[in-house]
View 1 (tube, rainbow, N blue to C red):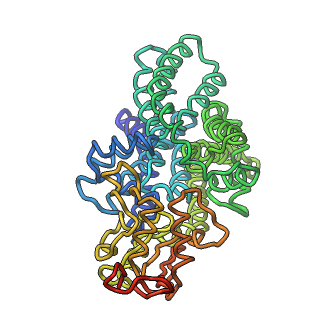
View 2: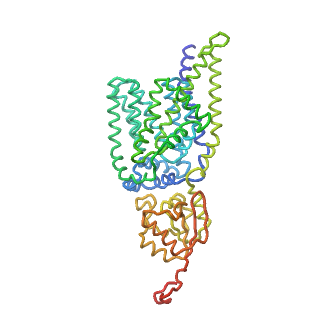
View 3: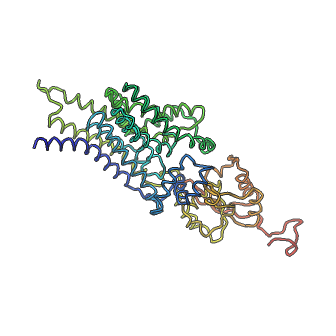
Length: 520
């Protein structure tokens, strides 16, 4: 009986702290998953993943090579059913796995209670929930990094050459999902230094890391030629660092934020856990922010995987507070940490603290389940176009990236004519198709008396001066030859109906009469 009880206790200590955070993360991830619309980046995943493999491969030679493996993976996923929920399910599953892996790291480094707390903290942090419901690769990368970190510890303890193969086998595809995940190698190197591992461990890790870098080099070489895709990023400052701190905390302000920071500081005293969590938390964001002072590459989502380090440190700090409370003397009598009453009291306190944190953040979670909280909602744009445009109406996308709405939700644009499109996106190997030259655009627009524009708000600002000659031609012709008759705005996108100032076919001074080369 005693052996059975011990085995059952070990099972509970190992499984429950991992399973509970996974269940909580699954509930949060599935909550409001079908929010009724994709935004721009998700629509890119959706429409690219539905192309044929040769079409995807052709696209990657010119753009988005950094997401190539993810697009191919999603091509297989969307073959099952091309829908918004299916698009986001891999990210939900990845977030669930990450919550479990963070918990497993905590169990391994500081015990089941710390593991349980770390997994739950990771699950209830709003940043986790945000990317768990996004049809992009970032949640998958976070899962890969958490898994590789756990395999790092196992390989370091095993100290055999064979033990490093799983580590490399997980980390290599993780870095191929997004090349900036390679920064975790620097974090892992610092972890090994802080743990003071023997030379044999360094040798095994060095070979595995070398293989990962070699596998990644072709992607780095290709993506360097596509660096214009991140030209919109700006140099990060102290405001970026502060925003990242708030995003990594289970509470973005007030007592929740300062309490989390205080617990992180206490968590540093759990040295073995801190040796893993602190480099994971600080090294990748620190390197990326430093490099971005010369060449902007930083965005919060690129270092989502570092959030696991914050959750581990906060949970470790809470564990130390619990240990101190368990050693307090009442009426001169010492209360043991292992006592059932103390364990129950501390457990209830922890549950209440986590519940209060989630309740405090509930409005943020709920807001995040609304499509309006994303940068744009292409489903709304498509629905508006369907209501306002007549069959056969010409439509002009300003800039051409606005065509993503028609690619993601073609029903709204099925009856209209894309007047600027020269070659479709899949056939041209581009994200949103090839457009006519400036001369061709002028010729096409000269043949119509009315044209709809689907435009981002910034594109209609008179101060906006696009580099692309075709975009400048669109704006120039609209300003010179058309006037706005009606306008509709939804979610940052504006639909305008332009009508010709002098209708096509109207005679002007010196024009030929109808029937002698004139135009009606």
